[in-house]
Structures are given as structure tokens and as C-alpha cells.
Image 1 (tube, rainbow, N blue to C red):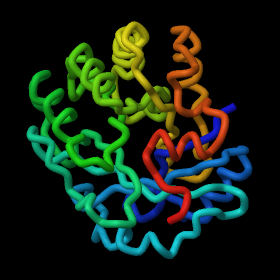
Image 2 (cartoon, helix red, strand yellow):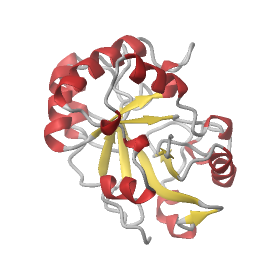
Image 3 (cartoon, rainbow, N blue to C red):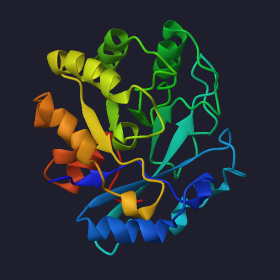
Length: 240
């Protein structure tokens, strides 16, 4: 059973189509126990302000039996791993860090890999987001070794795997990364990267790839038994 979807977007990201309450309602419909909301920050065109992260206290922890976690998809803006949001903000509970063409020019394999690694410096960074794009080639051996040694989750992004999806070469690149990760004990998380409520909890392509590779379920965060196990893995308190 897929217990969670920790990478979702609302209209606050500037290019998504649903509200937070619409996302939560669909998470409930899909049987999710935990949903994380992770809007983009200001380097992404269409995001006018980061004030949304200052007001996370308005969101209850539990809504219609769905536990709501308040996160951010922080955009990496240089090869030293600088981010476009202040993760010291108390109400941001966790962050995904990722590379986007609107926020940083593609670099060399070494530069892209270094950017992802350096972006994890803040303790709220828990997930390395969609490192699967041909536009940003990555040294997967180095990235996997780093993530395993430092206990980060790496994302298997369902949206990347869609036909006509936003990132090219994702299946090939994820297969390469997961093949290395399977030998080293890489912890992963499947995410929808939903930009409309109808995609919340949709991880079928990611799940199929992991099953094809016989990836150990004990290394996949979505398959833990209880919401408290997700909180523990991310270092988040149950009370906001």
C-alpha cells in the first residue's frame, strides 16, 4: 500500500491547477494517510512571493483523516547548491531540492552532481528531487554513494516517467541510478509531483519500474506501515 505522497503542488506554484484543499480531498479519495504540500519558491517563474511558507501555521495537521506535512520544493540556483527559499523558516518541515531549467542553466556532469550534493546542506533537506533529466546529466555513482552515506532519500518521480513528461531520458536514467542504488542500499521515495489534484497519489509508473528492478520494498518510504514511520524518517514532530 502506498501510504504517502510528499511531492505535490498547488496554484501557489504558479503553474499548477488545484488548491490545497482540493489536493487533500483527492489524497483522501486515493486512500493516502500522509500528503506533503511542496510548492515552488521564488526563482520559479509565476511564483510572486514566498509568503506562503510563512503562513503554514494556518494548515491543520489532520484534515479529513489525512496527515498534512508542510514542505517546499526548493529550487537550486547555482552549482554551489544555493537555494531560493530560506529553510530556516520555522514552519517549513522538510524540503525537496531539485534542478529546473527555469532556475539554473544545465552544467557539466560534475557541476550538476555537485549542485545536488551541496544543496542538501540544510538539515530540513530530506529528499533529492527527480535527478533523472538528460538536460542535467548526473554522476549516479557519486550521487548514490553520497545519499546512502548521509541518509537522504532520492526521488523516483512518476511525472518524469509519463509519456511526454517534463524530463527526457528519465526511465533510462532512473534505471541506471536504481541499479546502483540496489547494490548500495539507497533509500528512495515515489512521488506524483502532482500539479493537479487528479494526479495526487499517482505513482503507478514509478512503482512499475521499481518492481521491474526488484527493488527492495524496505528501502522505499511509501511502503512503511504507519504515518509515524514517515515522520520519523523525515525527522518531523507529530505536533506542528
